[in-house]
Length: 242
Image 1 (cartoon, rainbow, N blue to C red):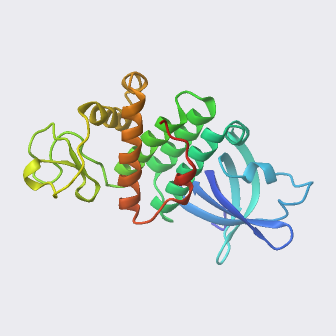
Image 2 (cartoon, rainbow, N blue to C red):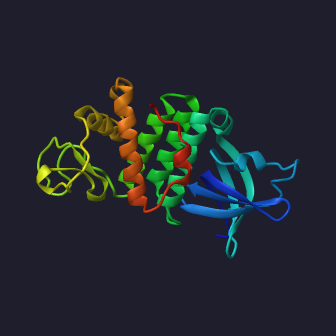
Image 3 (cartoon, rainbow, N blue to C red):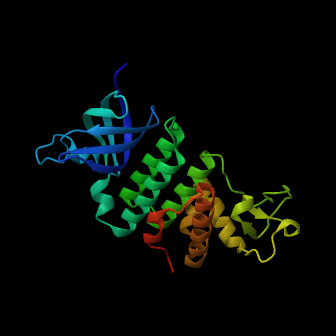
């Protein structure tokens, strides 16, 4: 059908002509969508504000040859104002959108869509510190994509843990026998925190110490960028605990 409807998170936008905008969205049922929103940069646009990054909308689109065309947009989750008014939330959310854009394709993933919507909602509401919300999102997004890290058993040999040497290139913690020379070791408390971030055990996350959160954030950043095979430009702006 040339006309279709879906729920979608706006990942990014860029200008087209004098009044239009190209919108890239991760949708619930149609994967990643690139569409033209005509006239949204005009002051009197009916749905311009609903098609900004961090927003979740019910959109109606017309299939085009190269780009689809947005014909309607109704807000489902207005997280933009809460997120953009706080620097920590804004930078964390920016990394989430950039990661979702890089980790999904046109086929999309319902799990990735639901994870992103839930993470943005939690971030906007301030349910947890923005840094740990981001780290939890990144670990889960990578796991859904097939890159689940190991924080207990050896990622190479399967030898029962706990092991403390973490090597992003090998998929997580590894036994001493297979660890590359000079590989860094993590404290057991940091590994426990990483496991809690991955599984969403928020009581344990909230009880963690700042130094373990800082170490865990470094691990998550390194692991994410290795598997995405590219640098996340927005990650350098994220506020991390000292």
